[in-house]
Length: 415
RNA sequence: GUGGCCAUAGUUCAGUUGGUUAGAACGCCAGGUUGUGGCCCUGGAGGUCGUGGGUUCAAAUCCCACUGGUCACCCCA
Image 1 (cartoon, rainbow, N blue to C red):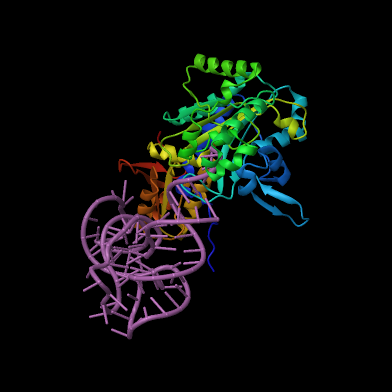
Image 2 (cartoon, protein in one colour; image 1 turned 90 degrees about the horizontal axis):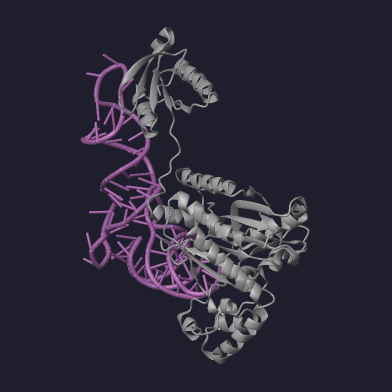
């Protein structure tokens, strides 16, 4: 019998782990600089949480969730995104009562049962942030500046930021009707997917990538041109703050995104270094969501970004050559007493925080030297009967080949 | 969920119109005289040719199914 990873999942192997850790450390550092605190929620939740927040009619909920019944017949779902769980935790733990504004971030695996392709896995990883409790446009901008800063610190500068406003419960219904009447005029020519959306979620029709759909909807009214006064002001503020930050962006009136909970600002960061799945990050404001999930009426904004896609971009740019630091000292042991002695010595050095390695296979000196070389050890110390008797040995610099005499009782690494 | 392409050593790939013991490179292991790596040289290990059927005297090669991978649609991180 042969076991393998299930479709759409991947092992992250030792050779690639340094790249992940590098990204994670930059994410954590920038999140900290922006004063976000980490939150870790379970990988699975009650199915209803996602259905309610993301929206029953979205693709994610209607066909992509890993949903199963546990032994007590409760319907559970592997989280397909991070916002719902973060808000559930915020509400459940009354975080809003501890301070008027809560800023949290997360990093971890998400699950969606889609057909895998470049940049799309069934278990993938995201980092993201949520700011709950304020409706200031400053936070909308912060949610976009944050991932952009992470990208910048990782050395990525080729991306495009698209923003839009999808309105609120005051202005959206009227616009929705207006758009629906327009869409019905060309209904029969729309793609089947879009036809389904005309009734329930007409805004998504504008975001269709089908060329015919785009042509047909080319001159249709856009949400951001039919906003109520409050939304108009908010959108204008967001844009002027961006200008002040000198961050370039593009207003895309068709941008809607596949989650139903957005109000006002919606945005997406894409990269041309990716294939068909080109979204690096996305997010927006969701002023009704906390209340929808049973909390007090609380405004919020957030974003989520894909780590695999980020890694793909880094590799495209030739910036994915992160490596784990090699051993500082590799001990070559000649016989049984030497192997034991070097092991004890290595343990001592390790306790001092020095990466040391020994031979465990009882191999020849040549083999051990090859191993030290393969691992790119900085120094090698060969230990045999003679060295143990005299307590003196040679410390070999593997880069220069130079050897210097040292005392085995007091191994000092040259700086 | 739908479609295209692909499936041969650890890895990347060859394998001529079906025809003897399926090859290369890299990697791995061991040697190149007494206890010293990187380059070089020599040797070695390693493959039920994805799985199962079928055609044939003969299948890695042709046909079918399945599985897996990959890319695209859809959607999104």
